[in-house]
Image (tube, rainbow, N blue to C red; front, side, top):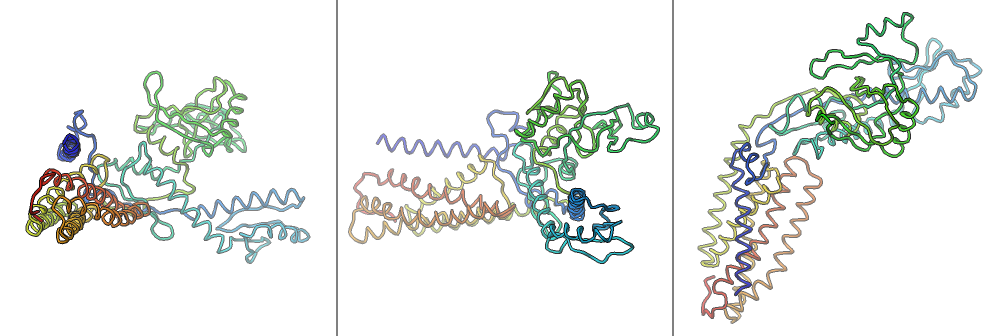
Length: 528
């Protein structure tokens, strides 16, 4: 009897806890966050239920092709120099590689050097220039590689576990577009734009000279800026006014490719900054750079804008900081961009739509009605067809729904329109396991077993059948969750949790009800 009390007490405690979590969804978010009693988030709504942002982002594939040609140009120039072959120039023009000033005697050497590049093919030359372009296969390879890189970086930025946007969708659309969907209320629209459009190319360069403005700096070099150097300005994040101008080498001393991590942090005066960590190779390069330039300024540049230019006080190897005049949110977003990595090419928002919540509210109302109607029909059928045992199944079904919503709220799952369909499906299927159990018990009663024995043998024989049927469905739901996106993933979450709670309700809660009555009593007839 004490074991039964513990069993009943544990079930009631579990149901009470999950009921509290479920009820918390109806408490305003501000009140939840101010109280220690309620969970902070609870059940979230997807884009199709609460509205949000829908963007079609174009990827500038042409720039990836341009970068590839520039890489091949540099490699070709180096190869020809090693062979002592002189040419007038090797330039990239309109998607082609042009080699001019070629000595006829050296043309065969140049073509032989180009044979090493399976990615290039000759086109008709004109006006003394030999022209080459990328082969169709290699151009397609660049397109696919670029799209894969852009998708990966955008997904890491949008879905960043620390400061990202939960339940967003980032997926490919066509040859050179990406679809981005962000549920409403999850993020400020301007912040989302910056996360998307920032290329995220990070560079570190030693400052050669500096002034308060670009004009003042240029005035010092009447003969023009020296070759191999450039001027980059630092602006105030809020006003966009120029704070300082720096003369820097065009080539970076080290780039963000060596970064391992970047996080929001605080200085001694509690001002936000970004702390970063290099990998071992980056730490070695950065350590050598800072050791050789103690007392000099080190400009930290992101997307051709200087974020800060601190003075190097000592050798720095693995860890460093980016300081600037920005808010906590700006510092956090900068950390997200650095942690996600640089985009290989720029992207542009080609289409923007705001998805309103009105349709979502209608869906919620319709889904609620369908769930209530389905629940009512199942309860009526169970009570009429299986009598007292059907009432046990109905109680287990109500507990099941409470646990389903409670577990999803506890883990801050997202409810989507297909998720509501999964909820309705769970209501319809939840009584399935009880039907299997009850029919087994009926078989035992027909074979002459006593009600008490029939209950025990009925549950024992039904266990494997119930588990086998639900495990196969659970495997399918997990596959949908792993490979699905957005609404499909929402359906998989609801279905997976519903399967687990349904099995628990049938095998544990229903059996506990039978343990209470008839329990150990020697009844002559079972109401089933």
